[in-house]
Amino acid sequence: MADPADDERSEELESLSAIYPELTRDDNDLFHATLELLVAPNPHVSVLFHPQVVHSSFCSLDEILEDLKIDNPSSIVPSSAEVVQPEWQDLKYLPPLALDISLPSEYPTSTPPVIKLSTSPDYFPASYLESLEEECTKLWDEYAHTAVLFAYVDYLQQAVEDGFTGVSGKQALKVPLTYKPQLLDFDKSTKRKKFERETFSCGICLEPKKGVNCHRLATCGHVFCRACLQDFFTASITQGDVASVKCPDPTCGRADGAITHRRAAPLKLRAIPPGELLQVPLDRTIVQRYVDLKHKKKLESDQTTVYCPRKWCQGAARSKKYPKPTSLDTYVDSDSEPEDSPTTEAEGSPTTKPTEKAADPSADRLCICEDCSFAFCRVCLNGWHGDFVRCWPRTAAELTAEESASYDFIRKNTSPCPTCSSPTQKTHGCNHMSCPQCRTHFCYLCSSWLDEGNPYEHFNNPKKECFERLWDLEEGDNADGGVAFVGQRGWEAAVEIAEREAEAAEAVGNQNGENQAGGDRQDRARDGEQEGRQGQRREELGNEERAGIQHFLEMVENDEEDGWDSDELGDEERFNLEFR
Image (cartoon, rainbow, N blue to C red; front, top):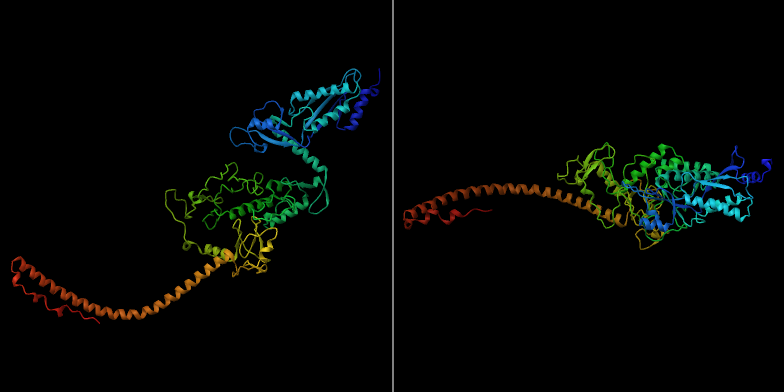
């Protein structure tokens, strides 16, 4: 009997094992082996997880889109409704294709190898695996009944790398929805292992680092070492500069680094979500501060935000648009959304159609503080009194001294952003400002929008009121007021000055009126005495006149009016009153 080590089959398996170290040979059967092949379609494979699918199948993109009556794959999203909708994913890696090899004693001269293919889960259609198994026999015939294992393994790798088009002619997979967790987890873990084996140049420290010591940002794919990201993000959050918690690459978010030269909505830089900050990793307390500051900035930039009237609380009312964060792991920041994309008021809530008229914020008067749960009216800021009680907003006279002082300070010492109206105070530097909330470039003196490509053109234009005033208040206004604002801010200041001058003039007029009133009171006293004497005289004459008329009426009643003497009413001198 021939030595198995000298068998041609054994030599082929040993050669294959040298090429593929992951090949596993059976100790009980020297001519039986298993090999797992990584499934990495190029560039990726489109997978549709469908709740009504029981067995996996191949399909084209057009067939899926026509079947579901949708315009593009990106619109297939999970629904919050009771009926589970299909979900679309593009995967780079799929679980390995298990190749079971058994070499009969007649191989390779008269019998082909016995091949069995399988996957876990069964995301490949059974018919597709059968067709791949049959290809081994075809290759064995083409190679004139010689060793064919290496050629067959190479064929399998090429077939899966080409995105299944080699045999199926299709570009997409339709699989049961229950396969989703396994396929997504495998794709994620495989990408991570491949990333850790590579070497990257950190864009901050510019040193080469292994992937195991680096982090790839999920929003843009830029890679930095963990130590640099930790230092950069921690310093930014500690200083309150949450707008800097984004990709440190200066070209990130721009197409070819281009800068727009027209007035448009400011570019929303891609913010780093809290969940990814925890993966960098950052300390949980730092990430919590980041989330709280982001939430606070959003509320402050929203002009419809109402704050709790309790002086010891001052928390914001619960908002559907900006709900209070409850979990760092599930909190989603919307800063990376495009400017022209519709935004939802809250997670899972429907978007407002453009044709719908915005609801009046005062229509829903009930507000509940998100911190102390105090229910109050957004109109009168009193405790909640019900929907059927009329109330009126507070007047300026009803504001507290602290509120009035805050409004006066903001009006006198800040300049509003032309995009989001966030008030900004300059502490030092030139009058070219960048809004900390939305990154809009504007002029501190007149609150005008500035071209990001050439912001200093505004200060070089002789027709502008800010001409050659770039460095006014270089050291900041120090909250002393007196800022020489122009434009809209200048008009507001002029109106305020005019109102103060009018109040001063009115006060002087009132003082002069009081002095004049002192002399007039003496004259009115003398006139009053004279008027009193004249009134007494009128009363006496009136009594005599009434008595004479009464006597005349009695004579008329007795038909004796012909004997009435009109002299009873007295002469004219009795009715002459003395005037001064």
